[in-house]
Picture 1 (cartoon, rainbow, N blue to C red):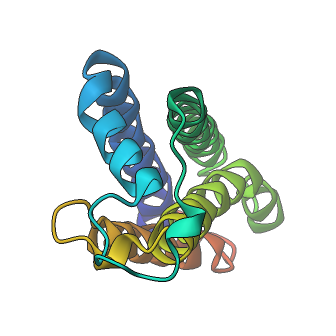
Picture 2 (cartoon, rainbow, N blue to C red):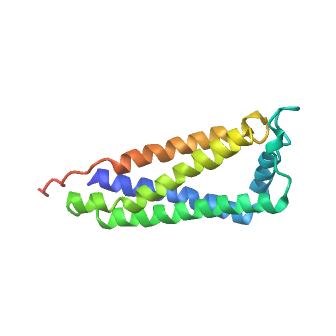
Picture 3 (tube, rainbow, N blue to C red):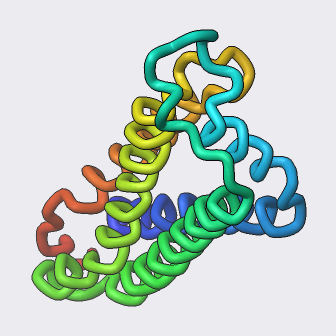
Length: 167
């Protein structure tokens, strides 16, 4: 039973993390908007790099990128909380039922992993060469969160056996 509880709690914990991230992004919109602005504008990348043609100089595009990030986080957060609830509700169920209850948590974790990998590491990090910036480089944080979500996904998705009968 402890393994099943741990899976539910870890899914909920990542959902809680994302809830705070979304809350912070909405209540202090300007802080991370600045991050999006500088990454897309590529204004702190290496001077004279040959990739500057990729830079974007449009406030509506900056806002669209940022809002899509917030919505992505909010969707993953919602799926993680719903998935944690399903895991909690099925904690005493037969193994087959419990294993089927993992779907929303797995979906939320996968969506979260895709955000760190696609939006931050690939688009921000490589397409907009965020790695070149000393100030606006979020690759370490994105890699850390990718690793956290990935470990939780592996754990949650591991097969659960029947519970031992109560003594």
